[in-house]
Structures are given as structure tokens and as C-alpha cells.
Image (cartoon, rainbow, N blue to C red; front, side, top):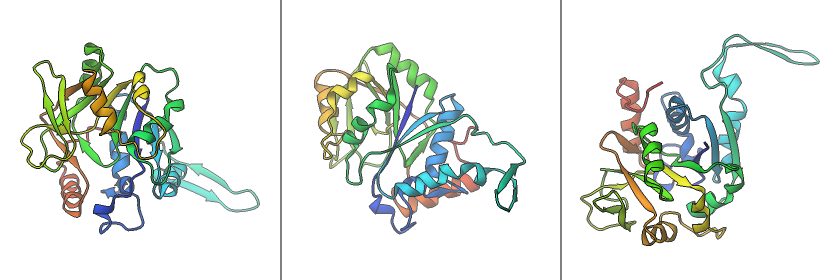
Amino acid sequence: MKTVILCGGYGTRIRDVAENLPKPMIPIGNYPILWHIMKYYAAFGHNDFVLCLGYKSEAIKDFFFNYETHASDFTLKLGEKNSVIRHNKHAEEGWTITMAETGLNTMTGARVKRIQKYIGNDDIFMLTYGDGVGNIDIKKLVKFHRSHGKIATLTGVYPPGRFGELVIGNENNVLGFNEKPQVSGGRINGGFFVFNREVFDYLNDDKNLVLEQEPMRKLVENQQLMVFEHNGFWQPMDTYREYSLLNNLYSENKAQWKIW
């Protein structure tokens, strides 16, 4: 099963942290938040990733292309033919990472549509954002998705009120999806999606297509969107304050997403 990660946005609200990096590459400790997200999925046995790239994609490509060097001790012998001897292994051996250029100014819905060919024949795939961490139980999330038979599952969390609020029915079906409510008191979309491949029928290649708008509302209308309720830790990294919060949690060994 593939795990798709949205990594292409501009991250304008957090430019004061790192002007020269895309938001998924902003570090928590010594590694980018994107790496933390991937490590979390890999801890549940999911290490086949598709990265939807856009803004400053070269930074993400360079990081993983040179990952073996960054993650290992090595001896380099210079000469006509340079040779490298690596002295240790790293826990990320076996990861498969497909880096897909999905457009500089492409919105989330079109980005997902453009990686359809990389899902292959898988009946379901997972999707998340490249700027948030949590301690969602991925095994239970996938089990819940398979149990209800609908096309889409998103993870509902309790966060700040500036995100899109969910209206949830008695059977965990989503009755409404309000992207930017004025007042929020309930759960919101925390990402950590699971989709059947039929979700591609709700998407198109229009670069302005936002996953969280028309496609989600159409899924709601067709009663095909369910919510996996998560009561534990969840935190995006949109601002300097949130960057500092996550780094402080990590440095103090209080990072609830660090299960590896």
C-alpha cells in the first residue's frame, strides 16, 4: 500500500523559519518534518512513499538522493574513480520513495490526481500532509477504512479553530465539511486519509482543484466520506510558534509521534 504525502505548497506562513526551504524540509531536531512523518508510517510497516512535489522540489530530491551519505559513516577514497565504503546501516533501508513533480502552483486535488499512475493496482492508498505529525494508530485507521466500505476516510482531530470543521453523524459518517468556519468547536480535518482508488473519479487535472473543497463535498453528498476519530496528539507546523513547539517536544523527549 502506498503512502502519498503532499509536499508541494509554498508554506508562506512559516517563511520566517526558513526562507530557502520548502515547508516539509524544515527540521525537527536534525531531520526534516517530512522524514518524521515517513518514519512514523514506516513504524507501522508502510515504507512505500509517493511524494507530491512542487515548490523547491530540488531540496527534497537532494536530501533523499544523498541520504545514504547523510545517514552513514563512510570512508571516501579519492582518485580517478572515487570509492565509498559505508561502515554502518541505517533503519531506513528498504524504503521506496517515488518523487513526482506535480506542478509549482498546483492545488492539492490536482496533485493527487497527477500521481494516480504511481498507485498501480492497489485497491487503497493513504494520504497525508507534509507538515503535520501525530500519534494516530495507522493500523486501526486502515482497519476502520476497510470496515465501512466507503471511498474515503479522514482523521478527525480536536485542534485550533482556524481549520475546516467537520459535521459528524452517529455512524461516523461526515455530514458536512466546512473548510474555513468562523467559529469552531468540533473536530477538524487532521489529514491522515485512506482512500479507495475510486477517489480518482472525483478528481481532475485542473491545477486549481482543491481536494478539501469540491471533491470532499461531493464525497459527502454521495455519503462516501467517513471520519476516524482521533483523541490523541496532533500538531501541524504552520507558524514559527508551532515550529518551536515541535522542536521543544522533540528535544525534551516528549515527541508523541516518535515511536521508532
